[in-house]
Image 1 (cartoon, rainbow, N blue to C red):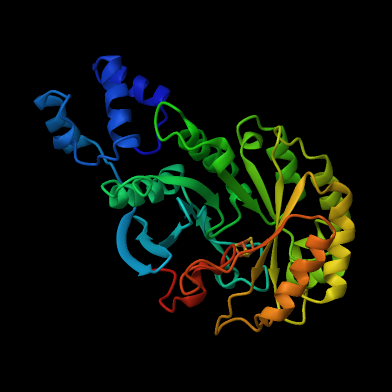
Image 2 (tube, rainbow, N blue to C red):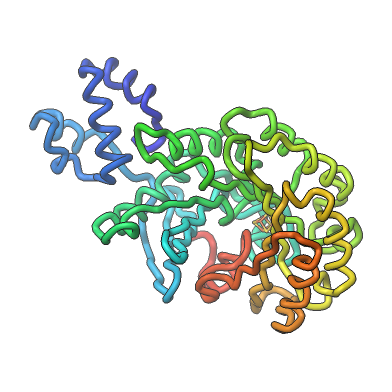
Length: 350
Ligand code: SF4
């Protein structure tokens, strides 16, 4: 069920000799009321509920673990072929943000990322991407407002979202459908490592370019970027920058430049000034999100001292650039893109 958009569900209803409005009712139950037990779908006939309970699969993932920290909750799911998928629910000041995974593993190879260690195992299906939200919603739906609904979604979990273009696009279509889940386009962000041909494809896609874009930049120049992100060799910094400066942004939006601050690698004042020089002429189009590196026993890097982090931010602010620091919410369970796995010691394949 949870890979079908409303039109597909209506077609499915017709093929199964059901009235079209039955599809609308089921869509509402699953994507608005977060119901996964057909016996609770009270406006459906008894026969249909029985049929659904025997023939309809409401989840493709199995929820196997939930770890709560004061400001975040990490969910661990298992796919039908035995792989693990992580999703993090982050408590912001007045809403939840859900950090969703799009692949099992990742082949981008960022040196500061634990997910990169395993390479890519496979793309998640649309159903598996959607199911991360459906499980979380089921968990929180009875909390008082506004905590009963995820407000923001970031594709910043395991994997490079744009490398799973087709499944990502369909999941986004269902996430933003006002007849169902209805996440605002302004509150859904795709975070990419910056692969040029995929970004060009996103820029031409009416659905994907209508949501927010974040780029994992992590350096102010080619040399440093290439050191920590090998994909910079085939996706040169200058070409990426040119693309971002000309990216077709919806009215009033900004591209977020994610910058994982790593001690003695990209956290110097010189780096901050270089970044400021780059961004300042386009400061209406960009904002910078500084992410102090989350140390991990399997990665060779360290987090800079607080003073250095604030200094870096101050240099950007002094150039009138919007620059925030993400003191990773629930540092224990959440890091930057791909750092989700940093703290887990169980193997990826269950
Ligand atoms: S940081 Fe993101 S894009 Fe880079 S290897 Fe990790 S999961 Fe992949």
